[in-house]
Length: 268
Image (cartoon, rainbow, N blue to C red; front, side):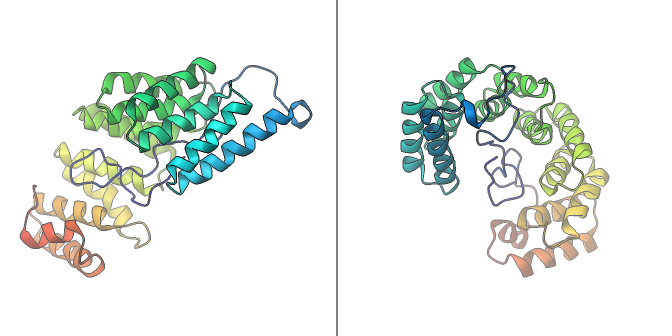
């Protein structure tokens, strides 16, 4: 899964862009029921396609999208039926803002392998970004329904964020709670769950989850500290506002969240 630097997903008010909702091909359950291919089964074209796909994924991770796209094209020249290449091509086109081509790529990946959990996850997140929320949830549900699906935590996280974007806070909480139960040490899940609870007015519960993140400097950031400030403000706890605000100001003096804190814009 392609990972960005921020901890917090970009679905909720006051929160930065997504941290890892995309899955590069080959890291999740593909769902093929055919016999497993081994090295002796691979042709020269198979090996060439796999090498090009690995290079494409590396370039994509470095945001060198045109080079990545060229490598994908060469992978498909060697293996036109390689669904994983279409999955990655969808991610590349989405990152380039070519939404029609991204959509076509994800659909082609799923035509080639209807049980590709990676492609379902990535297509679901793409659809969520297009605000096609019902279609996105169908893809997430289909991925989660695959037997022995290995990326449940991340798909539940993406599903919860997508529900929140749609204003479906009850469903968002359910998905994020399930994700948190599977990976309670994940700060991205904890902060997004805290944000949903904050939006629902459940400030004590929201405080619990974000505090676990903020007590460790290596997991906290400007977004998580700002969320803590807003929670304490809503609870009327001036001491808490000052405590977390002091950390926010000291560690991230130029961050937009710090500027909002200085202006007292707690509810913007």
